[in-house]
Image (cartoon, rainbow, N blue to C red; front, side):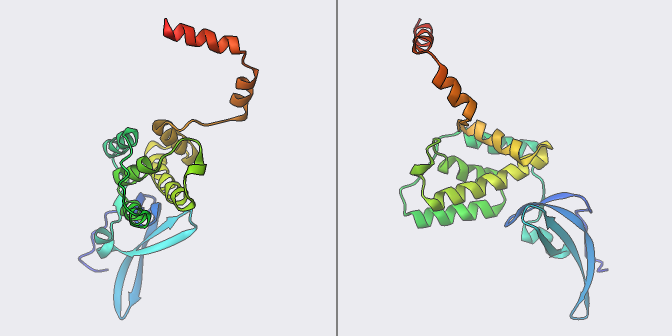
Length: 194
């Protein structure tokens, strides 16, 4: 074992690798490469069915980090509530900037992408690549929120969409609207006006 290896992570720790999101450290492995012993973190990404081996000495420079603090996630969630800031540049340049923000692994940067790409429930106004980038950012942030808040990824996604104001349409709510009497709607409007 090299003397300069400092182990920041242990088996079972949840970590974030910028290009892949939340993973779990399976352990530390020693391999001999070019007659040198090298200690490697073995990180598994269950959702992607992938294992990544990162040299312990390069972990920090590669961006491997612990899960965000609650305060940092609160900053990200606050960013989601803001107004979108779409610049009038070519889509290809914006898409590249969005991908860079997502791959940075920073929850606030990922939240900025979500905020800027959020739309109403009518997804037809989004291009295919916009939907892909939006979905990628949503999954990445939801995984970290789920790991920090100890909830499922589905619950985390719902939480993020609630914050962004995306209205979930369900069959039950559509039936309720279909069965609602027009006079009931008028009463509600009158009560709000009063």
